[in-house]
Length: 457
Figure (cartoon, rainbow, N blue to C red):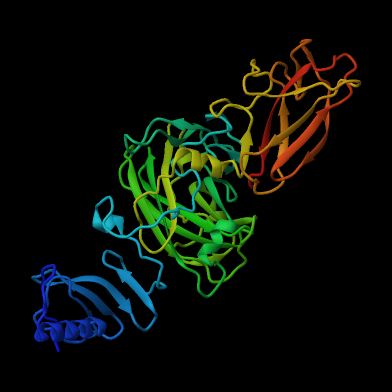
């Protein structure tokens, strides 16, 4: 039985033969044209499940001239890979992504949102400031990106307009200002991004079914050579080191690293640390290992790693960072600015305007929280509702807008409030009040700025 194309006009009365043929066509469609032999005389739009290759059936459609493959079905693993994917074996319903590097196109296949596990991968959000001179170990620079170090070398980490694409606003720039050319065994210098366990649990790290994942990023470095990225758990006792090559100095290059996540070890799946990613800029022998495999220990690079700290003239830029499930890089997922800011505020937020660095005595009351002194004791009470539920109960720091202390400012009398106290902070709100201020009059306005920090240490 074969499918025979038919066409009818509105109001046409069908003959018995046409009715019979319609029934036969319906039966053909119901049979899905499954088999190792193609349907005879197919019309446009006819579909066929080619079962000739056991384990890799092909779902095809006829365009009037030839059969076009829509997908490959792995009938041994209940997986489906749509045309443009890389390898079969994905759980049905989870669409495989286009390999952007191989396709060399912006998008050539099915794609879904919320792929990127990295927050602020475009380096758009800098809530704490735009320049960190002599950055200390643990300093958060662009939101969610820490500077890590142990050694005598000194860097300035700052927002930079050196970018890989005109549509990108800025990159993260590590500028070496004091070199460390002779690294001791325990010395290291690195940028770090931590993915929270609630989001990293999709990777299934620590389980036999740990998934493939792909990290991609743009890099611009003044020294060509071999560099490393490491992946670690929170305890830093499970590490995977991958090498990549900067082919040309002072040139933007896109790098892609794929791996299968660890099948052992302990990995956070709650508000704790999930996966650490570390871009090494230099390390002594204690942090060195061989690449390409999960190993025990706190390991961040190989012996081939360039030492960016070797000269005070060296620089390193990072931008467009994406970490996603799957064995291939897809086009960068650029989230809306307000959505990305909201994600950053889960870890840090402030009352200052976005472009204002939190500091005492900022010299303006603009944007500060205001509360009125109450009758009788002159106290003022603040309730700060966070724009996003924070990862953990935050550390709240107060800032006096008009003086170099952490007190509030009485705008009516031009005086400080005295010490602030009676703090009660949760993940959604912070509250505190002034101490007793007999010099204040009822209804005097008090102004104060604050930050809330729930970032990983």
